[in-house]
Image (cartoon, rainbow, N blue to C red; front, side, top):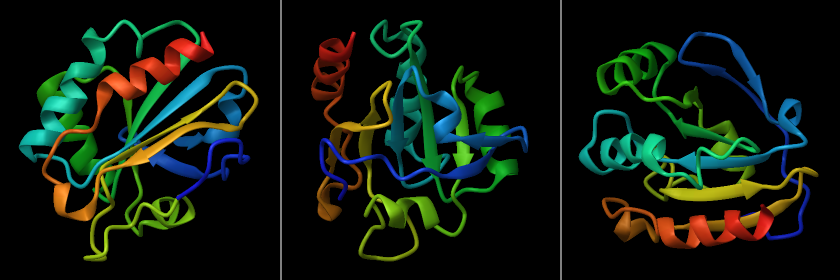
Length: 151
């Protein structure tokens, strides 16, 4: 996994709207990368739906994106179904998950984890659930605490 203080690996992926999203385009803001296994799964749904109501995650200087191996079309349908406010990025080949060492040992999904990239492009927080805890929600209190330190 990437370490706090590392330069965050840059990447470009497609959003649910088939538009390019590049990490380095968001320098100057704190970026929360929420890696999750799959659209349409209960824990992933609950976590992604909770983002809009979390004042820490919706602060003006914060950008949140969800990343999974699902396609642009799956992301679009899922975002529309649950009226998600943040972009969902299609990491179909798990290339970005691999850059961040978030590929699940099963090989076909990513681990549930979070990386916060600070305004300067450095990793400020990184955590992932153990592979056997893929179905469990991430520790959002730790994510919120890390973001508050960057405010």
